[in-house]
Length: 632
Image (tube, rainbow, N blue to C red; front, top):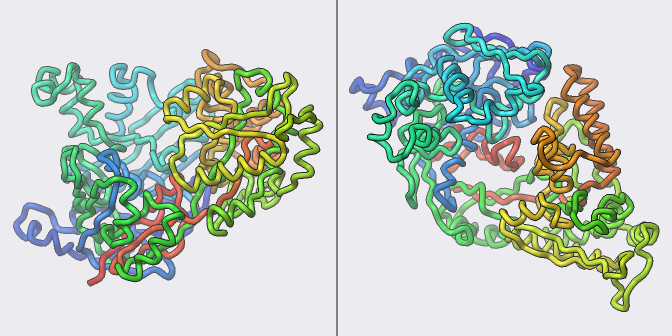
């Protein structure tokens, strides 16, 4: 079966590992661990389990290549909630990013986009859920009609990505394999919502969830089987597409959970109906099992160093690298260093909506923000905290992005104490107390309480060194750790004058990636929470943006949203990044920090160099862990 080409505003380029454009005729090989079930007749043969046109995965250049099925690996996690990591690592999405951040169909056989308003999705013929039930557009219909538009399950209606100016799409089930979503105006967020780390799942296993839905199954029957006061509560608990915590729920992922939470050890077994195969006709994943073992977070570096983890992609930091490298000499593990995908390892966010009038006025003065940025010695930060394995930078996108401009990474982020002092004098902080700390207009010392949630040693060391740098220009800061809840409440209410947190997560965008993170449209924007809340609540809460530069960002974002022309979108992105760099709405420190990963000696196909980020990528999901395999 020949797969349809797709139109998505990006070229489909085969990059390893990538989904091949056409499905070559390959003779399927039976998976050894499933052979007995096939022989007994309890499981169809491999050629009948996979889709008619499966997803053909090519391997990385320089990788170990096609592998052998079998074996298992152990990964250390910190809680039962980490079952969701398998959703990230499997990276089974309707549409995925390849390792160059280009979009291509994955679960889908193809997709077509017209004017960014009409999206036609084509499923693979013969694709099945992990229990062997057909995966069809009825699973999409069920989600749309019975979840997204069910008042008991979704009281606020469909997700924001499915609304354009508050209006939902027209959803057409064309046939068993084809579904179309269309809006009157462009929806620039629809495709991206399918490829991100935590995707907007447009489908559910209808055949399973109908047994938990009040429309299809009497409530008394549901409550007889499950504890709960209402069927909707039971449904929400069992509908674990992202959390991946329900052993009864069929999946499209490479491995299916077989351990009922809570537990100290979670076993995931291969999905016999998985839709990806390699070029030699071997059904993926190669590994039969993946085990998650729950341990205390502070023990993970030691255990990983001793080889108790076959693959450890999380809960390690650069501060662990020396120990891991030394331990590897005895345990035989490999220690890799991938590039972390964050605009800044730690960034400082002056709150434009601070409740304190004096500090709000200072935070809104670009000269003040620039002075604080210029006072940071980022070279010293890199050497002292990150062993020289970090790059001084503003809080902006990284060189991996085609939108990257090196001058924006250095804008107002070079070390210039003289210029910083001059700017602070111009702002009106030209008087100092006996301790050398500048005085505010009201005569009080310039003391900033910087609130943060981090417990990581290197991040706290980063902030501590910045405190020393700012003290040299007469600004005193105190670091105040907070619980995540208090941190959010104090930031959003304006009680927090300044916060410290990770930098931008949209660190490797393309022209079609949403620039929302760089504009005051989200409550989570730490530098402008009330402006973001105003947009998110449609004017019911928060405050409208009252700074010209912030309004400019809103206009540029709207230009990007309305346009279907890549040149116009590129120009909007360029200007958005330029405004952020010039205005220093957030103060970056360093980026491109290295992330250690430990890998068992026998585990193959884990790339030596990689990009480690939440989104896009899902940490290791970008590199297709279903192609990792164990040698003998």
